[in-house]
Image 1 (cartoon, rainbow, N blue to C red):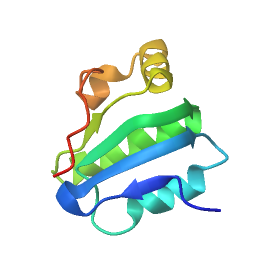
Image 2 (tube, helix red, strand yellow; image 1 turned 90 degrees about the horizontal axis):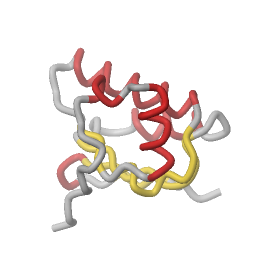
Image 3 (spheres, rainbow, N blue to C red; image 1 turned 45 degrees about the vertical axis):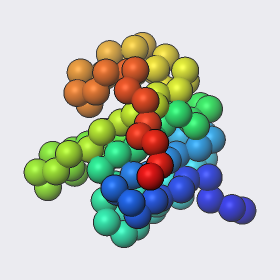
Length: 105
């Protein structure tokens, strides 16, 4: 099965596509931990997110804070926006929900 997450080396950005659900939690956790940690997570391709997906994002942010590095969530899909607003977690990530992903150079 091809990976639906694409980690780019330039700028430490990682794009996540498809579901961020319990069914992909192990795959996504491994992708987030592989190589240098991303400075940016592009969530524009996320079609569905559940508590397991949200936990991955919370853990990624917690690790970034512990490592004293920035982690931005950008390009929030409608699914991500809906869950963030429902659970009122936007402030934790410190990112507005309208930040577009950076253009590839």
